[in-house]
Length: 447
Image (tube, rainbow, N blue to C red; front, side, top):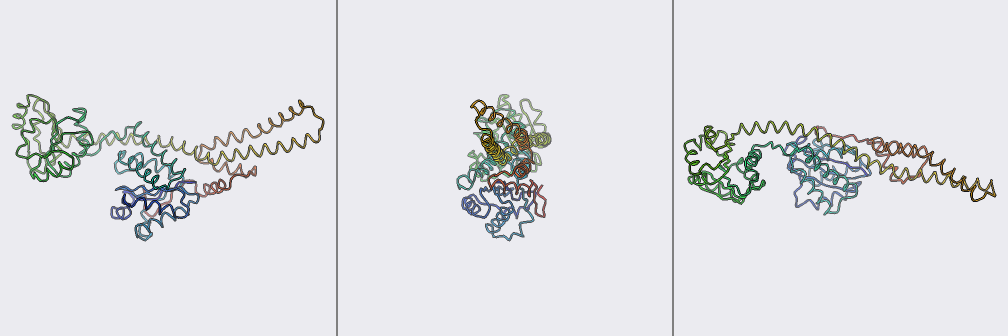
């Protein structure tokens, strides 16, 4: 049973193609069951996000499985295969395993190390389970991949370095005040940047979020979206006296907050600290505001400096993550090759026992009249000969099982000793020889 991964992502296909090839959550269960009915697919899973659509399958016939998946995609989306085939990447066998490990770890994402993909993979696996379309190979495949993704985030902290303006603004607020729950937060502006920031604030635990905008209606809409409260732009001063954090992202062409105004507000606040984060371009807050006692001001250049450092940190973390994936691939190879090695070892031992018993029976007939003690000595010697003879090939085969060539050594041993191994194991070894883990591609490069 071998894994196959076929799909397209933000690097291999433009958004207009990704849109056509995506799966809506409401159609996922039926799509999974339909996919599972195609020839050669023993277990399946569909991963569909805004940046990728991928189908993972377990198959004993790799080429048949690949053809089936492409036919399913064409049928499901009503698109001719020749239209989307150029955008597809196809990973088979161990390349499919490594690809999924990289996906769950965020190494294949648009933003390196992003956290959302781990939950999306877990959700896709849950959907496949609920649709009853997985099998043992898919279960091991995805349970291992999810564990790898969690291990990489724990050991490398790759997702602890924010690389977006809105997320970094929230992280700076957390660094200044610790937990955001219970802190008064005012967002100035109701555009895209303000919306992203507001959502990140709520995700970070902020419970008291005020939204102020020149268009009160827009402020109300954003406030409703995040369960916050809209306040009128003209009444802003009274709220500036109360809140702890101000994040400003208006579309104003001039400074909204000037030093004189903030000095007056700080007097009324009785020197209670205030954090101002200006992510607007042009800036909303006059730079001299940062010189006022008990006021901390960050502008967008400060945030970009942090982001640049975090990009570097994520790249370092990504290198360490790749090393972890290499380790996990060794473990997976060892497990997967054991599926072929164990039956071969059992068959070899059985053949050795069968030959031993046959030769002992003949020997005892010829010798005749042996005492029980003498018979015991002969049996012990025969056991010792067989065990010593088989010890080295069995030991070496177990070691080879942890390498990418384990299946080849297994097949050689089967042929040399003419072993009667399960037919499925022989067919699987033949497939491995034909497809030693290389990746097939369409005309567009995926990486």
